[in-house]
Length: 312
Length: 312
Picture 1 (tube, each protein chain N blue to C red):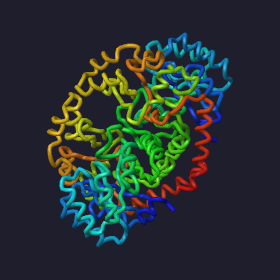
Picture 2 (picture 1 turned 90 degrees about the vertical axis):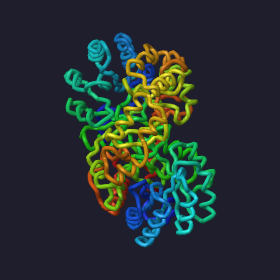
Picture 3 (picture 1 turned 180 degrees about the horizontal axis):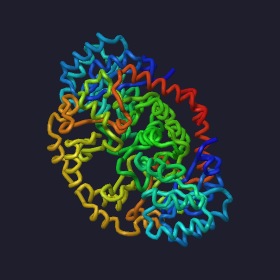
Picture 4 (picture 1 turned 45 degrees about the horizontal axis):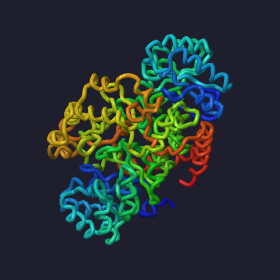
């Protein structure tokens, strides 16, 4: 049996990425009900908002789901206490040191997965006792690694280094890409961009329309002097790009970034002056679909690609 | 039969990239003799030097081989006349407009392949009448596209756009990676970094040693304001990175680049102050081998990965 399906007790090794402003209980429950693993993205939620989302997710699905916690979250103890109190069984941690919270979560019988973009942190996470890692490549949307290692290169590097299950992320929106990453050593895939377009995602309809219109080469990794993040081109991203080309410092970039730009762009739909986090593969996404359709299409495409391998 | 094996009349769909300062007749003949397609990299050769390499390649192998011509080469007509006069049967063109030379080559009964890093140029190349394209992702060494599209994302985009055979490049140094790219629609692979380390490559032994020592995250795409190129970290690359971080203009960067740095680094072995072009996957390369060993290992790994697919 697939190691990740067993670990999470799910039907398909397809995980919907926990994403700020896009993945609340509606999306997570829909993905879990379809046989994948839905994740509530806690990064953009106040603690009590997270509690509500967890409760609603449980009310709308009896299937396993997870919560993603960026470890840089300011009042993180509050989040963790809610996660334990509400009986969440799986937590994905990201953007921080896996050693800090893994013990606490494991002591509370929670399955822990940590997101990494390099082998060094994959090893750190394994040592901290996580159950699996997400290896996320340069092509992924949102926050990203400094090494800029692509999914195709990162997977064999991480596979060589760790013995725990690996979930591939970055550039995956089809069953073919899923199979490709599994050939390289992944046990499962985590998919972001495609699920931003799901009907159940809380991304603003203007953001969804902009993703559908996006062409090849219209996302870039920005803010490399602070926390690298892949953004869709718009006024906001252009102003950052311009400042970077002129040698702006980390402080100057943080000033342009300001506050609340991600909410403004992705949740409130200001697609010119807000921050739009999305992956390179968005160029191939052409329509919104239900989360169940996305899960089923990817799974069927994966099976077809597997059956077609004999012809290669 | 595999479309690329048929097109080139070769045994394995494994192509050794034409690389400046590394791929002369010794490497090309060895790869072709091993059943792949060897390529002489004309970019770093004076016309009469190329003639000698073609003649020696023919003397040491009766198998098909190719010449790679960067279309920005200054006295390109001279190169093309030598290619025709010496009866070269396959030419890979790169770094320029595929419309300029494809007709001339086709009229001389030469199979033409063009290297692209985006869909726009893949379509242009198809329209120009080339027989196949190389789709090269962001992780590749040397010159690279502005879109920064990774191999995993680029392949399905190009596959959707063109109907001619596709050769995947960037991040491929194993049979597993080869199978992954073929799942995504490639008919064959072009491999650079692994062949730089071949015993028959003309890369300086100091360059080879530096590649073997290179760790994850030690290559970066530089010179983005002029012609983007992936370089291995050293004094030279650091000085470019520093200038870029301070907002250096294209002119200032060209001044730092100067002349002859690629020869100095890759061919003469000044691994600190010379230019070292290599791909991200170099972090996984651990030893020099004969070209035949590289071809055979990749092919055997590909077959094993294919047979293992049932277990995924």
